[in-house]
Length: 440
Ligand code: PHE
Image (cartoon, rainbow, N blue to C red; front, side, top):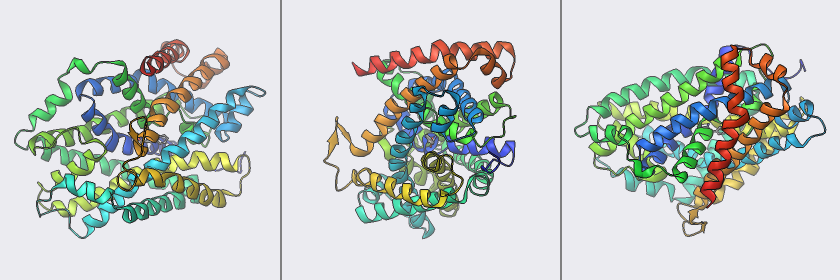
């Protein structure tokens, strides 16, 4: 497979995998999910789900991808010929397409905010940021145009291929983003009344401890780690066969938890100090971040840089989503990447239009009591991802012989045994119980 693209370096792979993981999941979705599900308890469950279930499955996906060296469907067909395991690749394909359909809507919101930030129309005039958010996302033309622009950026990077596109884009943005969050955290925590936000995040209100919160936390852990939808299988298929994977996976998980908590630490102190409600839903980050910047000297200028960084973090995740679909679309061929990128990006864009409009024109349409946007998010994060993750862990736990998984993981016997027991028993059981409990 020497003609297939590969990552140029190990650090490039870790950053690309981290880039795929860290995105709207940590910065946009985590705070609003925590905000509407009781704060501390959700955060605690999210961390537990990430470490105990998400990380071992992330390791499993790295294994499958590196061993297969092909797109997810062919990777399974090659490793388990004549069996239905390749269906995991199909779940991934459909889930990634659906996730990208609403992900690109939020990517569009970022572009809309960025264009406003560039004209300094977000700061210095004591705006009501909650009303502003509603105005922006309910304007059909602006929102669809921004969504299309976001898809175009994503597809241009994917079309350039693994090394030139994805790796280079990931290398620069993560550290800068981290720095900005620390700066924002300092401003947010020094506002009057900020402590209520810290309490909201860390003092548990146990009344929120139930199966539904657990399912949402599990879904959030999978969503923000990018597991269960073959995305990490796809990335790892471009990894050269002799890299250490347990360490890389742990790095990704730790960075992801750190950015999530940091996003919470920026947003919640400000929510309480500035008199907003934590239950704003999907608008939370878009409302609070400009509100915190307004409290900073040169806030308007920093806000521009921040939205550019957020756009990059979001794009590095979106390219992973599109990459899964494109990789499967071109399969074993080495040409056709360009055509496939345009074709699938166009389909996914059209698929996302109803989600984009569900905050305005289509706001009356609900499916199972959820808006179209929420519904697509809910079935992908809370059902498709856990189901994909379940089969992924069964595959490495039972289809791989112990000899294979031991030599693939290539780590100490203790860690290997903990990992094996999780993918064989704990993760499948936990996922099944949580799925069943939440269905009734
Ligand atoms: N993990 C990404 C985020 O948090 C979303 C994602 C999910 C990307 C699945 C790829 C695959 O923003």
